[in-house]
Image (cartoon, rainbow, N blue to C red; front, side, top):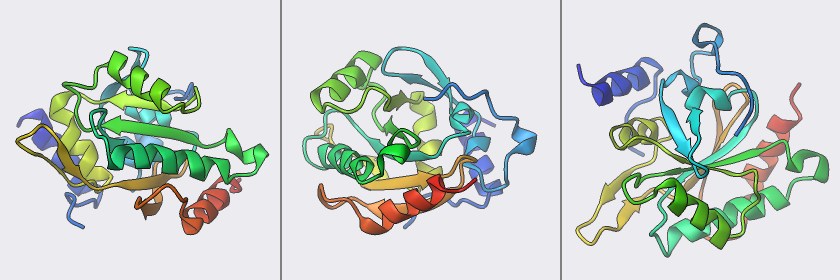
Length: 198
């Protein structure tokens, strides 16, 4: 069985169907992860600094996650600005508790240098993670996050524009469709609730 198929079967085993509708934390012990944790997916990614980041190593801190691509000039900048606006809605003591992680749909063009340029151009906080999966692992992680996408002939990508809130164990706790820069009050409330949990 090839690797993408194995990853897809893992998603199905976790009860997550294919999409149809940075941390210093130690690597997660798969046996201790909750059944619905997305961190069961065994993949490594590369960040905007060229460092390897194990997907499961994000465990231990709530994450606001989205998928985007660097050559997008419409929805992806809105995703970044919306995530910044969401983070700014948090009280000062919670602001740094939330990790924001952006995963590229286009690892061929979105090299670490390209991701670093996107981060700089959009003036995102230094602690944000921009992660690049291997080309054959994009579909698996998109399926887990329920992000639909397809490449068009002109090189652009049609994709779901969404922010997904994961708790410290990697369980999906909220989703918000991105339609503009203004943050979704329900998402902000969900983030605050997750950050307040013991």
